[in-house]
Image 1: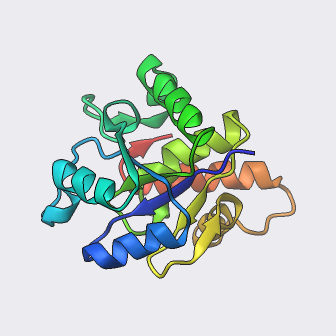
Image 2: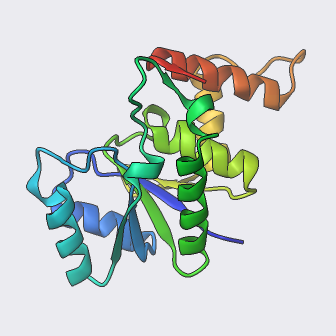
Length: 184
């Protein structure tokens, strides 16, 4: 089974970030930021690629296909995940995962507030049968189902005898997306 990780660079210094991804066994960093720029120079695209290469970690930019920003006035993840570019990016990601352990990288430290969870990981789990794992800020590895459980708890959807887990999870995803101004 393919292993795919995710990570948020947050405001980490370079050595802390490198320790997080190396500690998780990441071999390829897949940058899924729509705009691969950061206030911190070591997370700007060219500098990041150079530093990773020096450490033996491949860098791939897929933010043009898997980025979370839209040109539309309202970001609609339902629409985005059906787009040919997004689907091509997923195929590229799955190809990479067949050869190495990739980590999808964006800026947010908590996957719950990032498109790498709300859009990409949800799609991978629901449509591709791949269960990503999320590298948290403290280095803990959280499986997709654990992150989803945390999402449901956050929205009070963890227990409802009248709804299935799938229904509760769908409702929690929609509430989280709405909080961020996204359609789902």
